[in-house]
Structure formats: C-alpha cells, structure tokens
Amino acid sequence: MSETAVDAEEVERVAELARVDLADDEVDAFSAQFAEILEYFEALDEVPEIESDADLVNVMRPDEVEASLDQDEALANAAETEDGFFKGPRVS
Amino acid sequence: MSLNAFITEETIESDAEGPLSGKSVAVKDNISTEGVRTTCGSAMLETYVPPYDATVVDRLKDAGATIVGKANMDEFGMGGTTETSAYGAVKNPVDEARVPGGSSGGSAAAVAAGEADLALGSDTGGSVRNPAAFCGVVGIKPTYGLVSRYGLVAYANSLEQIGPIANTVEDAAALLDVISGPDPKDSTTRFDVGGEGDAEGQPTHPATDSNYAAAADGDVDGTTIGVVTDLLDGADDRVVETFEAALDDLRARGAETVEVSLDSVEHAVQAYYVIAMSEASSNLARFDGVRYGTSGGYEGNWNDAFARAREEGFGEEVKRRILLGTYALSAGYHDKYYKKAQDARAWVKRDFDDALEAADVLATPTMPVLPPRLGESLDDPLQLYLMDANTVPVNLANLPAISVPAGEVDGLPVGLQLIGPKFGEEAIVRAASAVEA
Image (cartoon, each protein chain N blue to C red):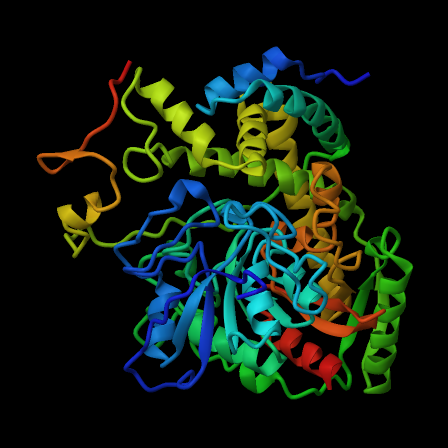
C-alpha cells in the first residue's frame, strides 16, 4: 500500500499552491494519474545516499553597468501597462 | 505545410558570409528570435515576441544561415511525441500516420522532409535525440555547458542543452561548431577545463580549438564501444536486432565492443522526472498574464487572476508537470522525492564515469520502441515517460550523446545512440560517422 495515495483534495491543494485553476474533470483525472506516477517514483527509496562532489564554481563579472533592454522593449509583451510600469490585478 | 512542422513560417535573412551561407535552418520555437514570435508550443505565449535574440540565433546569423521558421514542439518541451503542442501535432515525414517524436519534433520533421537543411532543437531528457531517431536523421545533445542557453525559454535548467539536427553527422557537427563556445550571458558556459587558462590567464572553453565537423572521418579502428546491456532488456526485439546489426558493422570496421552494466539506470527515469518537474514548477511560475502570457483580466485578486490565466494558457501535460513538481518540492515530500532524485543523479554520473573508464564511447538504441501512431500513446502519461529510459540518463550526467540512423524496421527508422565522456563530442561524432558510412 502506497503511503502517497493522492485524493482530489490533495490535488486541489497542490493546484492552489501552484496557482493553476483546474476543472472538476481535471481534478479527477489527475488524482488517478498522480497516484500511479507517485507510486512509480517510490522506487527512489531504494537509491543509496551518494556523496557527490558538485563541480560548481561561482562565476562573477565586474559589477559594471551594461547595455540592457529599454523600458519600452521590456514592457512590449505586457497586456496592460501604465506610466511605464506593468499593470497587474490587486495583490490580495 | 502538410506536416505542421512549423508554428511560424518567417524567413530571417542574414547579410553575413560564413560557414552556413546558403543553408536554411529551422529553429525550435522555445529559442528566442528578436521580432519573431516565440510560443514554446503554448497558447500562453501565442502573442509573445522576444525583444532579443538567443545567443545561438546570433551565431546562426553571424555564420550566414537563413532561418526559415520556428519549429513546432511539445508545449514547453514537455512530451515525447510533439502531440502536446497547442498548435496541433506534427506528422512524421517517414510515415504521416505516426508521431515524429518529441519534443523537438518539428525541427526533426523539417529536416527529414527537406523543409530545412538544418535545425536547432533543445534536449532536456532526449528531446533532440528522440525525434532524430524517429524521423531518421542525426541529432546531437552536447555536453552541458558547451552551448549557451541564453535566450532558451527554460523548462529544466540543470538538464537542457540546445543541440543540432541534420541529415548527416558531418552537417550536425558543423552546426555544433557554429553554436558552441563560451557566452558571457550564460555563466554555465564559462569555466576552465584544464585550470590553467590561455596565455593571458583567461579561462578557456572546450570549443575554443575544436573542429567537430572534421571529426566525422568514419575512422573507428581501435575504438572501444561499451554496450549498455541494462538498456536492451526492455526494448522492442526488432529495435535490438537493428542495433546489433549496426554494431556488427562497426566491429567489421575495426571497433571493439565490450558489455557494460550501469546499475543506476533503473532509477534514472524516476530521478529525471522528479528533477525536471520540480524545475518546471519554478520556471513556469513567471507566466502570469501580467508581464507576458495571456491575461486573465482583472477580476478578483492577484492569485485568482493568476490561477485563471494559467488554467486557460497551459495544456494538460504542462499542468500535470507543474503540479507534480510543486508536490515533490512541498513540505514533507522534499526529502522523499527531490533529495532522493539528486542522490540518484549523482549515482548515474558515477556509473557513467566508471563505464567510460572501460570504453571510449557507450552505445544503446536511442529509443526502445518504433515511432508510435498519432494519438496512440497520449492517454497514459506514465507509459510516455518510460519511453525516455535510454536518453534521460545522459542528461542527468550532463554528458554528450548523438543519435544516428542505424537502419529500418518495416520502413521505420531506428536510431543508435552513442554517449561520450564530458566534452568528448569528437569521439561520438567520429563513431557516429562510421555508423552512417
């Protein structure tokens, strides 16, 4: 028995966290699919802890002003703008 | 275009003279082109027109190439068949009743059908190699860091690379010569492999002195090819037979084959999807209908408007992955899924390093199956994810790999995948050129 059974309530909670509205039939379909997919992911429990040496280095450049998009270009794809700003819905 | 290989057909001419003068190139629609809309196969970005070029597009223009259009793709690169595009499925030019593979299906179909000489795709878990295999063309997934990702609309940053698709290994390698190299706008391309740098002490990049096209000389005499036995078990028998026949040819040309086993690949698909979905859930948060994306209007508060815009703009597979990624990263599940997936990723890397001690390159069938019929595989997402078993381990390990046509079964192409060590692009190009000879 999988400990990650996913019910419709759980799918709706995650959808809210992800800011994606779902239709009722989508909630039902996803509940069934998520149970199956997450059960498949359970196999990761068998993976041993691996010591990995991340070959990462910080890459810095001098803090100098460089050319960038101008305000018009940056706003060109916004549906609504006002006085050179993005215009969005109320925050809460 | 009866194949639906392009979302936007627009010619972008170059006034430069270079190695790609006279060549037409299709560019996957998740690679930014200044002034030409870039939809990522999504309704969310139907009207998005980037104000700048991706670095690879700059390089195509500098090399004299003519861009002939933005190639169709699975929405945001999420899919293995190019059926999740909001602009309709692409048909496989080899057999129009079948899928071209995904997610760079439009790019591969355009080349296979002669609608472009060359194409660029992006490969997050096999998205260049898979459609190359299904359409009977050549595709290269470069080592992570060889090609700039600047201007590529991100799906899963730590996994994806832009890669070339062409009719021949030499042509694909020549396109890689054009697009590879360091880019100040993408810090993952900037490091010093040897540690010493050049004469001035500046970090060097592996592509600085490379000539990938010249490596396509067909000479595999003395090359040791490791056959990854774990990835043959689940494959279609007819695919395995074609793969074995291609290996026979390579042995006849002086290559030696050895069997290698990678224990970790059994967990690679799970690890890949957990990591890719997690990164997707974060990357796709930017599509809110305010800065770009279709707007949900201004009714209600920010969260409501945002959630409605995303319900409308995203297709089913994209929603599925965003939600699963959000779940995998949520409180209580992070250690169970995401952390374990990172362990599996490190394990896969180590396994590949060990195997590449015993062999110069590794070989597998690119896809374990033949191209499915259109509509055949969409209903069961898990089955679709399992199709990626042979390609995703390479992305987890950040290694280079190429898919080259190995033969046909009932008129359908079978691809052979060759995997090389980090920045070992010459080795896989050389071995692949022997397969097509």
